[in-house]
Length: 144
Image (cartoon, rainbow, N blue to C red; front, side):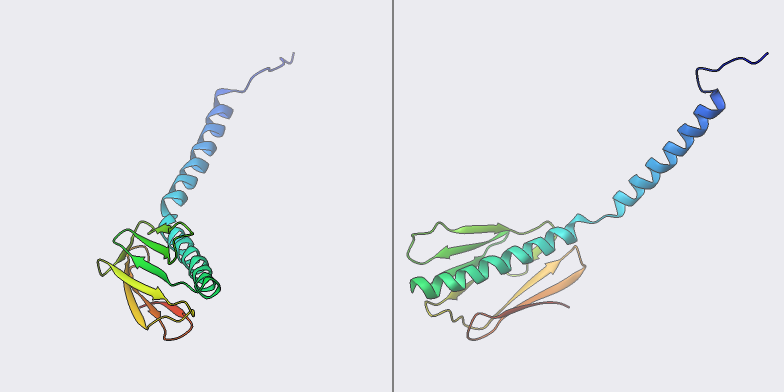
């Protein structure tokens, strides 16, 4: 005579539990190795690029200078004639400016004076060199 089963046996339950624990363990191990600092740093540089380009256009179109000031934990875009509020971008965790405070002026014709800003990236374990070139505000970011 065959009995019908309405539930799992103990052995089946233990096998399902063991497989679930292994999957969760692999997922947690993979999440620990995932470094959000590098992603935040990339987002910071993209945001800086966007606001730098906006500031160049703003300076030329409004004929007023823009101050880009690097503080110890953020960079501030300050617009010359005060009709636009300043814009602040916080540095991501792990990216530190080597010098305390630095400033770059985007002149009313879009030109900037050459300058180099040094950063220390703990996310990439490298020094970052941000070089602003003479003229039309071109800059480069190089990991060394």
